[in-house]
Image 1 (cartoon, helix red, strand yellow):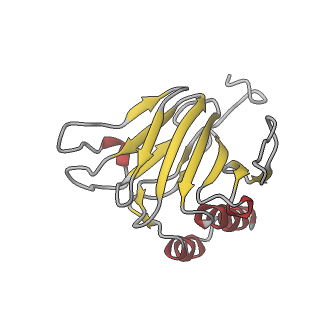
Image 2: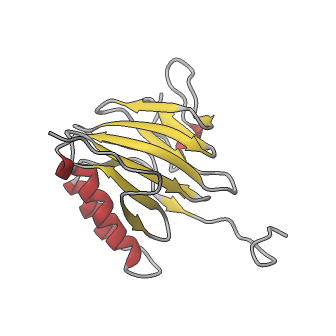
Amino acid sequence: MSGLVLPPGQGRKLVTRAQEVTFKVTGADGAIMSCFEVMVPPGFDVGAHTHHHSQELFYVLAGELDLLAFEPVARSGDNWEDWVSPDGDRVIRAGAGSCMFVPPGCPHAFRNSTDEPARMLFQSYPAPDHERYFEEIAEIWSSGRSVDADAVQRLRDRYDVSQLTPLRYEPPVRTDAGNGR
């Protein structure tokens, strides 16, 4: 029996205008969970959502992400960043070394509200659900300038994703050839 060792930068990559996902460990490797390295661009918001069966773990490797992992007092509006838990928990700005675990049924979200890309290690159980989800969402993102909202909803329905607030990708507007001036 052999394990799997991947050097930095190795693994199967899916690259779209909204995300870069590198498959590190998959069901094809015999794993019961999937492991990905994800580059989250500025302006990307996965939207608050739940899974009935999946468990997830997010570990910030570089940059900063806004993270949510609690049931709010009220699931109000399209902006999860204002949600508050019954215990007073709020969304946090998480830097490198921060970790978020999400059990089944727990509302969760992440957003890159900075001007710099963030990188995270993402694990999900069971494999290969998120592997297939990432493959199919990459096809949807790559199909043209606009995203087919109905196709995204059908995808979510197939892969145990109950979306609570919208997925958004609003890259920062840069001027002067990307120098921010």
